[in-house]
Length: 576
Image (cartoon, rainbow, N blue to C red; front, side):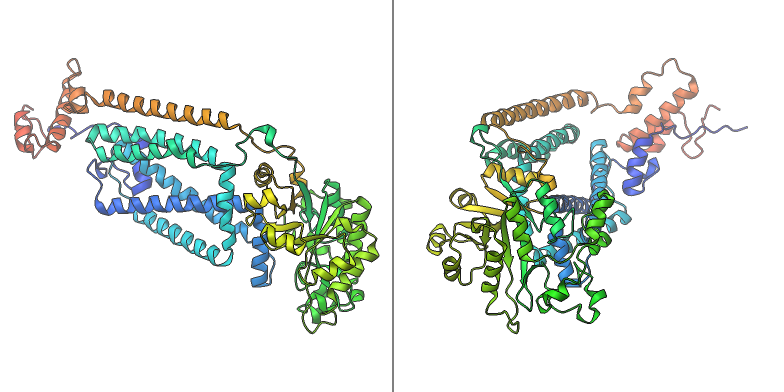
């Protein structure tokens, strides 16, 4: 009977098999390779890295843009005519794409650390390409429709910059383990140069990081006042009396609203040009559902329900948190007039700021809209010193009739122009005001919903903000973080020194670990330790040594088999 010995006996490497199998569908050992990665696969590795970086920025953008989700949804509503939360699918696809690409990046780094050849499977190449193209299309779309929102990135970096720097420094320091292994095994000095440049850039990056929250606590100005924009629209339907009452319960110092003039000259609160989104006009006046809000008279407007839509659409996902009493109040809300709002503000001694929209030219009040609004202010009995007047038209006339009104501009003007026009306050979007504006002009910034943005503006010295989430800002009695300059400098220098010491230690350790592995391979080392093993184990180890030496170019397979008493063609021992 002829007995055959197995060619080789392999150890099971489940982790390595999973890494190479998931990344390149190379589940078996003979499919793996320690050869250098081909140029084509290097190109795909660069595409994967580019996609990861782009998705990282895209994900960060949408994470910080949470402050303006309602603004984005309103843009979509103006384009489609249907109210929906357009951020939900964007966030879901972005999170899924980023998780997928980040997972492939981790697998690629594992391949490099283990010395395996990079060979991305074609299905993953399709997935990476789809993620890259989708993200590029998304960036172009945002740039065309919502370009002003890009400013949220540099503003948010004032809050997250120091922490992102520490995270990036820790990540690059950890990657030095892989680089050190590659340099020690293959003496690739170019990778060392790249690592050194990356670390050097991170070491000096705090020189370019600026944040108003890096300051002496004694220089912190008083907490900015919070104005309820459209009341508290996350807790109640916008521009309704209950919404403003809820905002006052959150200790706001002012109320902000959007004002439109009805056909019979009554200023009322409405943000949209039509009544479709925030009333039941389609049910009460189905033939007039597309008409402008200013084309209705006050009698018709009082017949509309302005609260049911909030319970049905749940625009901020907050309806489930409401009590039965609150739900009943919301269901019975009506369109609110400017005079009603002013009476409420006067009772609570709260400031009122409103944006007045001029009716169309064919409107009966096209020429009298300023006088109609002033008349509503005077009839309400509110002190004029509590009203911030924003329309630029006929300011001289307004100052004559109501000299105590707070003249406010919604356009960014120089201090000289403000003095010439008699304007004492600015109402601007939070990305429009500079540090110089905040220092020299009384500025109210909108829309500020997130605690991190409120904290940055607080440290910048802003006197007041307009918010759709007064219930959230109420929970911010102090900036989220405030750091002394000397303390931040100490953290910066300490982190750099720790990173430098760790990187040097990693390179020294990798050099020591790899020093004895250049002239020996694992099979030779294992063979030298098999003196007392059985003859079959020794034969197996000899055979593994033969194959390893063939790979290393020591000699031909036939010669090595002959030298070790093996038949090359039958794999049968000659002595048997």
